[in-house]
Length: 125
Image (cartoon, rainbow, N blue to C red; front, top):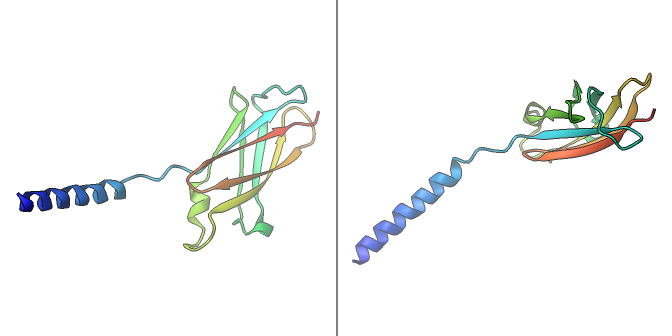
């Protein structure tokens, strides 16, 4: 009886270790919400994010348009792959956004590895 309990405990312990090691990491995502001065989400706005090298973020530049909900979604897994093993996996960005305006509106954003980070930028018209 004692032997059965020991074997059962070992099987449960090994199963728990194996199941926890198979978990997949969440993607690293930065969502930029673009709003007008009237606080309305702006579809088809141009959004550019640039890594802030002064804050130890690797060089990075990506540009997208917001979807019909006024959100630009940036997947940052490739950026975080550039970090060293002992580095803090936090990236800082300068955000540029514009719709029909001639000039970009500037903002900042921060993203962490394996998390979905969000930032809102209000476009100057």
